[in-house]
Image 1 (tube, one colour):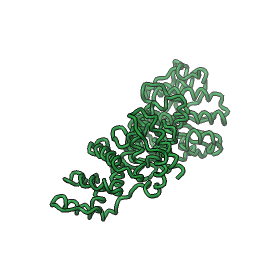
Image 2 (cartoon, one colour):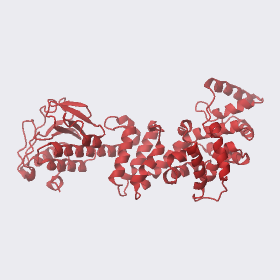
Image 3 (cartoon, rainbow, N blue to C red):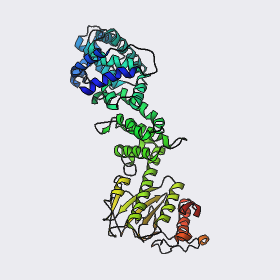
Image 4 (cartoon, rainbow, N blue to C red):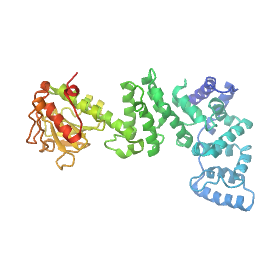
Length: 478
């Protein structure tokens, strides 16, 4: 109750900061009186049982089609059938007018209308816009304490104006002086039934629409959680259907896809972690990203590939004796810069499988590597139609056509040394750099890193199979 009281008081104060027509808000004592009734009126009204609604539907259709007098109970039940997806009754002549008339004197009918409007709300349905304005009128002419929360919300942010209310609420959640949970409490959207309705779905659209400008602000790192908090309820997405997930992912990633400057890495990591937690890894669960679109999905894949590259070479730096690891990092990073569709996956030996550094960067997206030294790691890369396997320590670089049965598959949780050392493609020589290559299919040794020897041969294979062209200016460490 303390949070609710604070939220209502702050809602009154917040209305004074909004750039809209002057309004006279209820005085603090009136808001306090409303709080005393929260136990009775704050929870969302639940609809009658399905069988009762089915019976009410039959009675209402008969009454308003053939003539008759509906009971007060009939009209209370009717609000739940106005925009029912199966067979909406909003077009039944005379029904809506009868409901409005009863709502002027019935709190139960008015409360039911508000709940149904919030759940059924859609900007694509003009009739619902008009209903919102009529609800505003009824709340004005019926100033009961029980309805004070709704009047305060409407006076503050044009709550019942379907064109303005959802966007104003989105702006308040992001920029208001109150915490998001206080804003949600003040407007009733901390209730799970309201949280999944059409009105808040439109609020969510407003939040993600504002995401690019928010993420580019100074101090955006501190704003990210405020941006993301209203998108979840009890640890799960408020709207988990594919369309809503896709809209959300596109909105949160749009700032990295337009022509403006990218936010700082700390902001990117927070968005990345949120999307991985709720949409999962697109390399492992591509169906959950389908509605996000190719551009947004490829961006997330690119981020994850860079995380894998970073983690792999950090592990080499920590555990390997190979003094040339930085040349490998420069080479594969340059390759990723040329082709954003490259995917990566790690396999870690037993001694580093639980490395805190790897877990932090990869969020669990890696495999165990058996049959190798415990401090070894492998990096698998899918580059167009070719799979590459890069080893830490003194392991050779190997490659296979993706359609070969012996080619390792990305995304597994366990790899053995045997499956990662099967015979693969030969690495061609590159006379330009004096690279002899490796013709036996058993892998390319990382010799002559400072003289472009192995890089020249690997680049030649890449060019032939993937049309990715690399030169020393790309692959030499800076």
